[in-house]
Figure 1: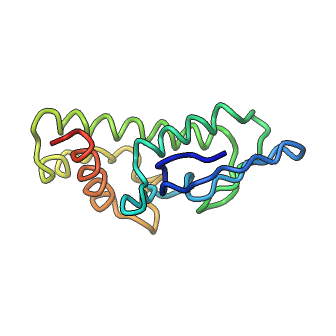
Figure 2: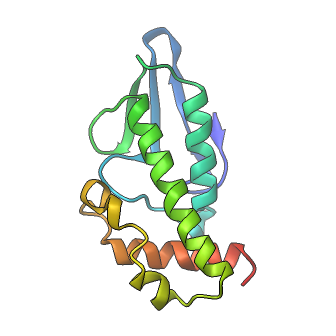
Length: 141
């Protein structure tokens, strides 16, 4: 299935029903904050939506192939989704309150997740800065 505006605007998630496998490509990262390629149509909001679609299409026995990291199960997608929703909410709340990027960075909105998700791809402050910029733009600020 095509999932719009996740990692890019051309992402697809492939379900192999007979063997109960879901290939998610770069819509799902294990052990790293994700990369949303905004220049190619990707977005954090689209990634959250794509993860929700994936969650609705699998069961607890489905084997998940991520774009990065080891194979996973549904619970790991749920964890990734919930982490993104939580951090997005924290950043959006501060944007709506008029906070600057520096203020949002200082609040460490990812702190509780960094041990599990601050992999080799992004340092937490780098990822928060990208998310802030994207979410600020989508909020019309």
